[in-house]
Length: 364
Image (tube, rainbow, N blue to C red; front, top):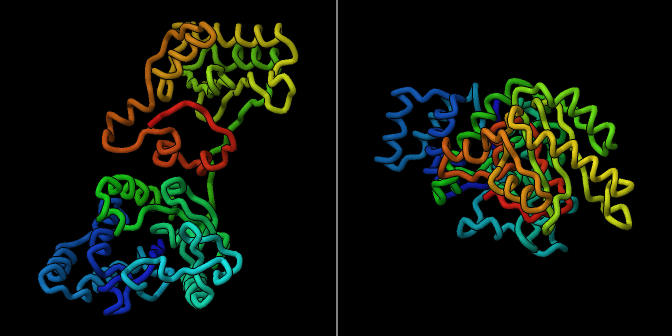
């Protein structure tokens, strides 16, 4: 069973004390149907049409009740903020709930709302859902102690606040979808992932073998053993200014080599012990990149290929595919950065939020 956690009551919800029974709730039901989590019947459609004709939210509540075996709904706050602005539940840091970050910039949820978090925790523990979908920043704040729904949506994590140890998958709130229709395809994609993730309660990450901090002999061994006869090689570079800081080579989804050239731990910032070793490392990499018999795939390859030629004089041959362009062909209206593609197509965590350094590369 999936538990959908929203923010707070709106006008319709306040009237009947049931979550998601207004226009946002109707849209959420439609997206759940598109994600194949529920199947809206003709009878459901009649109830939703009656809601729009009569304005009676109990018709929407009835649809939710009919699908309660698959999904349940609740809110962080079973209350309606003044002017429907969640900031009206907030105050200064001194007034805020200890152990929780600000919900919005310099705005902490006031301690008077602690009973709401306790009630939410009791609901979760009572229901024991296989997956909790955090709809928007407030739910993410309450259950993970984090905000930033755009960066964290589409990736699973365990709850650390309110009720700990439950699997979470954040996505946009349906009210945000109604305000920004371009968010809808991403939200549906996240709900499709939610259905898959609800089949098991634990976090499952793909197993990867990644060779890091190699010496020159490691690079030669990896290339000879894994790259020479691979079906397709994934290539990616990281850059700083006019320099390539590292290059990644992956001959299959569960195996990769990272060749660093920049090391901020060293005084001269060079990873290799001397110039000869660095030149030899580039020689091994260059032989692979210039071998037209090895088919290659990039992410934003027009940037990488041009940068490799401009920076180190490596002329890439055998480039066949670009994941950014392939995704753009499928979803031209959506984002195309690697972090976004990872959230849609993989079961990795939000690795982009873990990076401490920056690059000049742009994918969107």
